[in-house]
Amino acid sequence: MDGESPERLVARLAQCKAQEALHPIDSAASPPVLVIAADTIVVADGEVMGKPAGASDAARMLRRLSGRTHRVLSAYALMEGGGPSVQRTVETQVVFRELPDAWIAWYSGLPESRDKAGAYAIQGMGGAMVSHIEGSYQNVVGLPMERVVWDMIDMGWVIL
Image (cartoon, rainbow, N blue to C red; front, top):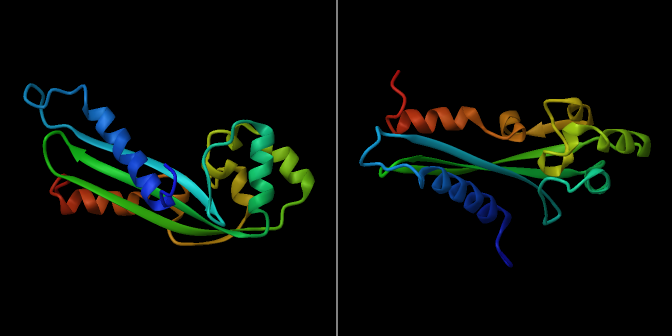
């Protein structure tokens, strides 16, 4: 939506995914169901980068990120059918190396660049583009499990 902050956008997307997953479940007739839904975006100078539309869009994104710091925002929603829910957004700062044009052309042609926000997969060959991060590595992969697990424990959904 116009004027929506990146933080609000990614939180709304995660919440919508969770609600969509719960919608077909009849909570009265089913055992308790816990849904975990998430979304991740990359933000560079205020531009929200989702998944690229193709190789040329991936190359554009990588040129934009080359040699710069950007933010990775992952939001998740934990919802129990008819019960309590948790929603959290986690931010990680990622610093990219200066990328040669040949690397950008090669990497943007890889399948791993297509299905990832910002056109890179830190857990794949895209990790070679990263100089360093500040924050959660798992968040950049797409789901900050170190936060999800503790939120589930705090809600009593996981018993140690």
